[in-house]
Length: 123
Image (tube, rainbow, N blue to C red; front, top):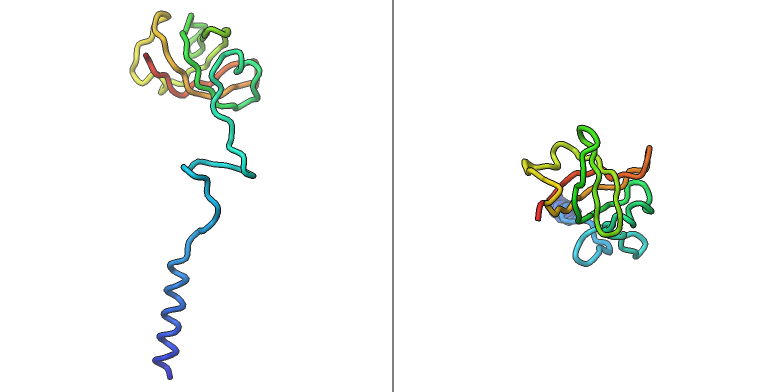
């Protein structure tokens, strides 16, 4: 009788050990909430100027001038915005106003409309 009880207990415990999350997951991965896919990154300066704080951006254009140590002006065909570039964003690249780049970051509306840049990709 003890052997039967032990075997039943082992099988029950092993089925719990194999259990995992089994819910509705978004096809292709990523995050969705209430059946809605979150908006993709903002792609123009004009959109960034109107966007909410912390909205993700992926802007393609040119750095036109340096304002101070880590602040620059960035321009695309829709307008111009101040950007604050993290040291790591440069990734060892030398960028001039003639280089077309894509910047990745987020909108910052704390003091003024700007973009916090976390990565720069040179074209």
